[in-house]
Image (tube, rainbow, N blue to C red; front, side):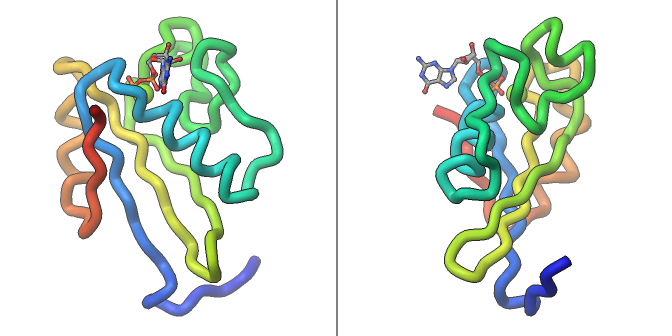
Length: 104
Ligand SMILES: Nc1nc2c(ncn2[C@@H]2O[C@H](COP(=O)(O)OP(=O)(O)O)[C@@H](O)[C@H]2O)c(=O)[nH]1
Ligand SMILES: [Mg+2]
């Protein structure tokens, strides 16, 4: 596994309300960065971060799930957080990340 210096690692939490497009955004960014050949789609149940049976069936993220991409010598760790109220407590710890991206 490739080693990255601390300054070349970014932890990025994607936070926003349910259905904002967080999971699809993470899947698309990882594909565009070249870290995942397949472009995973929420509607096809093929994203990296909504991998559990319940999430695929309901098309809803139930937990914080993780994925990473390498871009310009930087490793970006994405935290795809759940947006629906019942699961927001799972998302809170992710907000401690230095970088947070909100949904639309
Ligand atoms: N047309 C369109 N649909 C999108 C876009 N991003 C997400 N969606 C759709 O919006 C729905 C919710 O997306 P999802 O990524 O699961 O939202 P999340 O709940 O914020 O993770 C899915 O049906 C996606 O296919 C987008 O940029 N354009
Ligand atoms: Mg989601």
